Length: 182
Image (cartoon, rainbow, N blue to C red; front, side):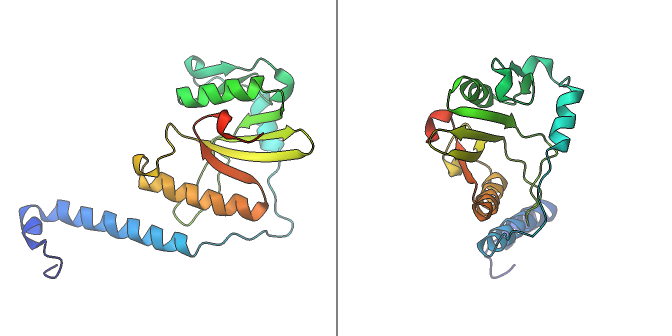
């Protein structure tokens, strides 16, 4: 602590100082872990559709005020999609109305990717078809500026990039569907 040059801050409020130090050490540890992260395909391991289909059968009843009613029901597993922000609502509307999007889903909260810094739940998965089928996973945010997002969000996004890159799935962070080359 003497070499940090911040001993006077410790004396003012030792508890708050140690909490701040622990938080910074944790952030630095997560950054260090992300530098060496590597995802590999494991033979015979894959996600199954059964849980998503089960959710569709049970229906969506949690937040009636935050539901986008799907217009093109053949393109989505659900009649309505729960959104958490206006960005997500607009993204759902754009996926629903885009003729090149063949299937889309807002990934359920239980769909998580294990990362060294905790589970990550990306927002969207969708399939497009023109000359070929393309599979996309997108995280929707109100900004593309990583400085305006929380550090932990950026770290999980970094894990998502490596995870989906390993699988050969097009993954990115977007603010709108217009940013996706479909």
